[in-house]
Image 1: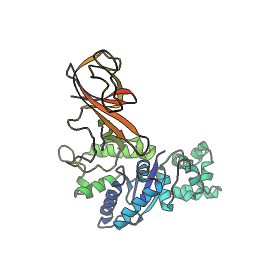
Image 2: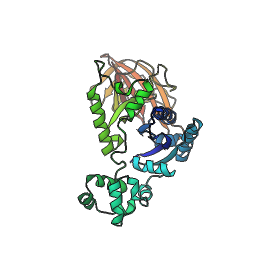
Image 3: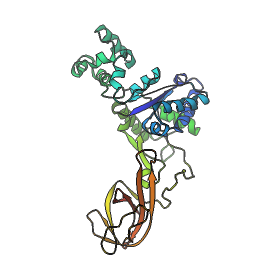
Image 4: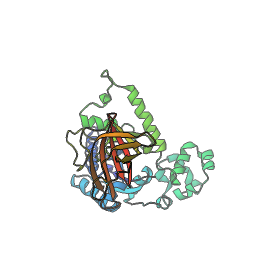
Length: 359
């Protein structure tokens, strides 16, 4: 279960007549996105983002919370912050200012009062049965909970047990539409436009279905593609949970030194295919520690395919990343085969890989 940072701005949780809270929440999201671009608005006044990447970059969970708090307080926002696995625990952690580490979820949830489930009927009945904490609720058998209280109580039981990270109904499916309306200066009823200029009901239905799936199965159950920075084609795209804010369109190139220049390849493999480079004598061609090729490449073999003679090549271009941790060393090479196919090869761990193909 992914550990999330929850940012809770209670003052923005209810929208007034003028709708100022939505505009302020959009501003808050923009500030948080400068620390982590994968911010997901949950409902008005609450957003989350995965802590793993920012924690590595900033030097720990506490440093992430300190950076978020400083930037938001500087802009005049009063927030509560917390970190825990899953949306439910992260929200509770924010209310209490807690950081829940890996393997600490059950211990964090166990002493909490059952009222945190926000199920009035269930949380009135459980104390009468002597069940007052999430730990005591989790100790009940799942079958007995389902038979006595029904499917929604079973979802609560799974969350209390740490088996699931999110309760149904905690997300506002309309928050994305309202934020887009604020960001684009459009009326909320005209945000989703079809090809004929009218409201596209199919898009609305698809968004509702996706949101319901996320409510039941977690935010990672519905993913969409989103561009991001990177040096290699496979680094320049990622799948993120549906409903995340789209980045602003920019005509400038992000500051990624040594990124692959245009033109971009047309086909990029998620899992690179093994390849071989051979010289004219049939000997393997590798990248030396100096960053140069051991010989002039003459033949390329993709997987178990037939050998292809080469007409030209460019590179190699060495690439060293993550110098602060688990260092990654690669080298890129562009080759043109005699049949006119242009390939982007990557050399890593003494092995060539086909990463992309040019049209």
